[in-house]
Image (cartoon, rainbow, N blue to C red):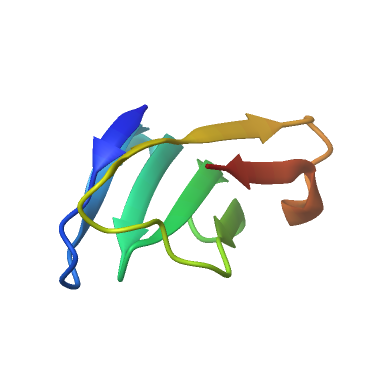
Length: 82
């Protein structure tokens, strides 16, 4: 996704696909405090991954975000790139 985040502290989903009637099964790519996060959920909260970037995305500039997942079932298998 290409995003242009404001310099202030915003929060919300960038992309998401979840089924709230089936224990929120799905995934999302979100931002909070210009840090990018990702959930991969089979059954919330018992079987889910959550990864959040350590550094912030630059504010007020277009940035390309990409997330990959290797299928390992571990948070270490999720990578966030920008």
